[in-house]
Length: 216
Figure (cartoon, rainbow, N blue to C red):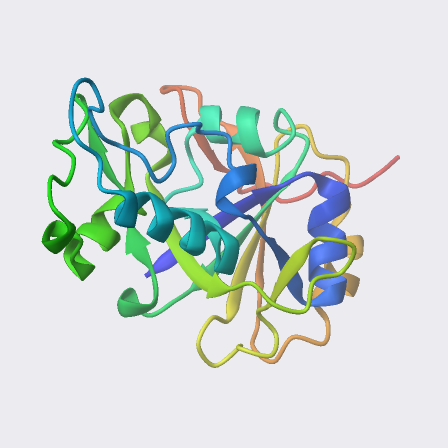
């Protein structure tokens, strides 16, 4: 599937040149309900599950993507108010997990034997309904070899699994096509460079078929 990762212009160019993207830890994500999509009122919560959550958050990180780049709210929240850049990758369906959105918290596990692999997959990919606009999919990866407390996923090293296919430059982004061309010139496959604009008949971000307007 084609998936999209939004960044500020500065970090997008840095990502392209370094061939890697930052891995988020679950404690750094912006949803405080991560790993706990349960109704916890007046119920027994197995200590084994709480311990498993802590262990998971300490050893596994996530790279977050959207399945579309046309939502203006995504650009506002994750693309530096439309001044950023969106990177499009192709990934095998079985390498990422789609997020499920729910309106009410789930019933929590009641017994240690409820702590199954299926429950674990559900926990790491369930969010509140109001996050649905993100249309999110997640790539999970081990946390190792930190640099100043940060972790990175080398997508160039994994290019056969996750090739870069598109670079979409935001509506308000001032980065030139030449600058993008320089940043992607050593990538193994052709990369499509798109300049975005606002649609006239809908609240959508679309391709500007005029391309980049030359600097004056």
